[in-house]
Length: 426
Image 1 (tube, rainbow, N blue to C red):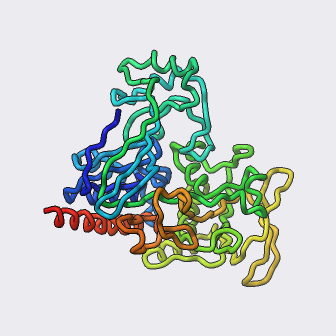
Image 2: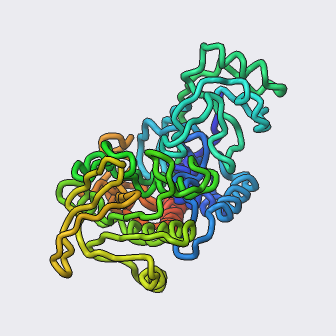
Image 3: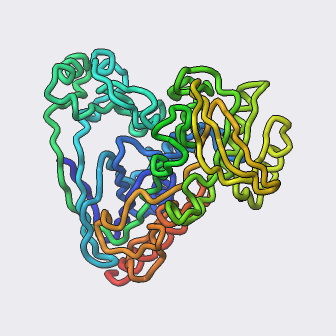
């Protein structure tokens, strides 16, 4: 039975992505006790699924490794993965949290040797690659997963595969009798860092995401570019595996649209400019077309935009693409009107990437406590929220840099709440 040692001076952090990890580490390194709850089997969130950051085009693995090392070294931090907060009662300085723990079926004896995966035959869509690849029923979520432990998919429990995995483990790490648990513990403040999810591109019917194989989203394209991703880092068409040298990016796919997302997600323009580099770096004869309403590149990002704009094999078309059709060879064709010259176009491409926006991962009805949110679903900084503070993209559509800054601020607010508790009780 999992136990958590906590008091009303403990800070609960919900969500283990870049914002949650930042908030938890910043608070723990000031000496506060912190419990970090993450529903996935690993920490890192969506940042761990990125191939490169903009504008430096560096890999996120460096920052991940540093954060993971900080987490391992800090005795003030308790990490619960495969866990969800299902209830929160009380008031600032005196909350009681209820957390559901799903079984991993693998205990701390795991050395990540992979012997269990070798004998398991069942395969499932790989969530880490947004379903573009398969993984075994016994799997390591990704190469830098923290904790570095395998997971057994609950769908193989009770099958021959589960027993094969248990028999293959030399360290006694497979525990098929693990059960779901519910634990309760006190805390004084809560940091809500549940992050974001990509807008469902299938809702944008004119773009045919659910009909045309060669129309993908920006998060899927990011995994394709990663050498450890579903295509081994090759920019290819999902329909036939052919090289995708003529690539189109459609900005504001579902964003700034009263029928979909009202807001600008702030990251989409920069993400497409970054992903343009992936294409032109892969092929000398690449052709990239960016369809845009306006490019939102501010501050230090302006130079990055100008660099891409100066590339001879990159074209910018000021237009909201009206719709996408496909020819007999599977080539997606973007149709619309260039609003600078009012010329109609019908442009074929090898691959179209939809720059879909960000929306909150948790809806208002799923919050375990009453909380004030805005019309886009993000948590508002409202006194009515008491000792519950949003961090990162739970508060707004933010890039990694701004998420880290915001999470640091959320940690400070939570620390102030538990400090007041300590002063009153002292």
